[in-house]
Image (cartoon, helix red, strand yellow):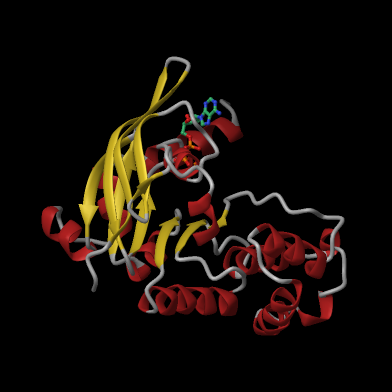
Length: 261
Ligand SMILES: Nc1ncnc2c1ncn2[C@@H]1O[C@H](COP(=O)(O)OP(=O)(O)OP(=O)(O)O)[C@@H](O)[C@H]1O
């Protein structure tokens, strides 16, 4: 694998009010890598991605994409990035064609190129029949597939996938997992955030665990197993983030629901 650094975070920190949400995060991601960026709820994963994408700017530290600081090149680098947000806002009043035409043209693509790529992608994602249908009537999984198409239409080199499998059926999950693998093999870099540990374990070349705004583990799944007491990624994750209270938490919830007799 090439050692070209595609993404680098240097001493990335951000506060919201009194809360230190990211604290001196340092990370280098190489071309062709799939990075599983995981952490408990509220760890700061989405905040990291939002800073990288230029959606938040009151941070300290620096982000380099394709070797250039995003402070120096605030717009150009975005053309080579694709993003599937966790809770993707999608224009419900548009059809698939109108939405993808809008996204593609924002990336500077020609209308004809967008249309021919879109036809091929809709077919692969089994969405051809809704090309001219308003997105408002789509199921959750159909919207998710359209968000994935929107993230890929301009052939980006760096992809940010935040829970990309959300709402997808078992067959579509297999396709997207295979797609991520093949994209990485063709030299694309994927920054993959998810709570589905068995998928992260299988798909990631490298796993970075963020806890309370700090990186507490960074390595291949085998590295993490060697440094911790083996087990699945879920077990290692729970161990490293100090969570061993699942039984008690569940029991407390049941007792609360049932009320004191
Ligand atoms: N704009 C904001 N203003 C104030 N606090 C914020 C803001 N954005 C995020 N936070 C806080 O920062 C922390 C990290 O949020 P973030 O969304 O990055 O977590 P996450 O790791 O992506 O979590 P999840 O797994 O639940 O998606 C949370 O405590 C959140 O409340």
